[in-house]
Length: 340
Image 1 (cartoon, one colour):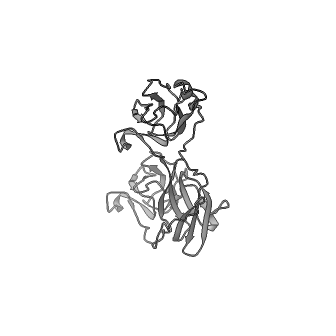
Image 2: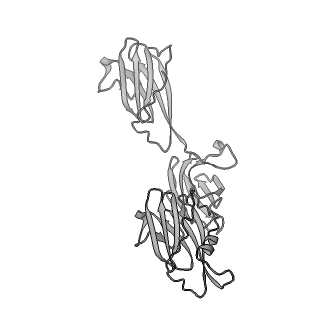
Image 3: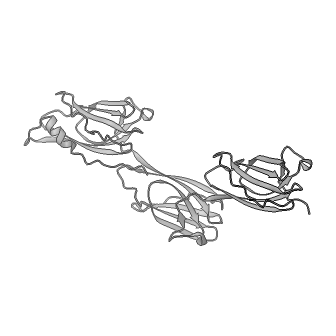
């Protein structure tokens, strides 16, 4: 999770020095929490007094201010002086992007430093607390329909509506959820995730944080810990029953992943696959990857005859390896079991 971290910088002291405020004078105070939401590191942050021309210099030092981090700033001014539109705030990011706001007043406000494509007005700042976002991809691996998924805020005690509605979430379904909180609130262990299946089986996780994670809803017999969820992407499985109908021994069967280009070892080894032999293969992929036409199946026979199918999907099917004279299509395989 991208967190805002308040940097404990004694910036108020810089202003007391830079703007020469009398030690015992009655003062007015401006308090600003400055959030970096530019999408990159901010390398320079300065404030200039529009009346005296004095500047703080770079308040961030060599470390800068990371994306989605925040820094508190305090300005003080004698009560007898006018703090309205008194300061100019300027920042520079690592890429050289610059922002400026020339009429900052003595006040207590949040300030977001924003990217160019996030601007809704004429300046590169917004007087608001940005939102933190948690994104959850929820996989139903319970083996049955899930009829209810809810989120409860552990602080406010508010519970969401049922995210899967009347239709529910199918046994192999996927639900995408987004939660948001103001950046000045604590998202750690903030939520309780609860689900109910069609049979009445219930699951709960009471310390869900605001983060971006995959979540698998587990069946009771799949639990490996104390809760009915796992923070992982489940695997999809393809099962293939491969029949050798070439009329001769097959000496090599391999699978190549068309995306990664990785090729398996020879599944039939040194012994090969007899002329009437059967080979059972299982392939797996994370559920968030596309298994459609993902693999290339290749075989070689004892005589050197080769066959290839380049658009094998992750599925459960029978496959017959065909001889050249048994081909009825463009490839040397058929998605069927041989007739007995």
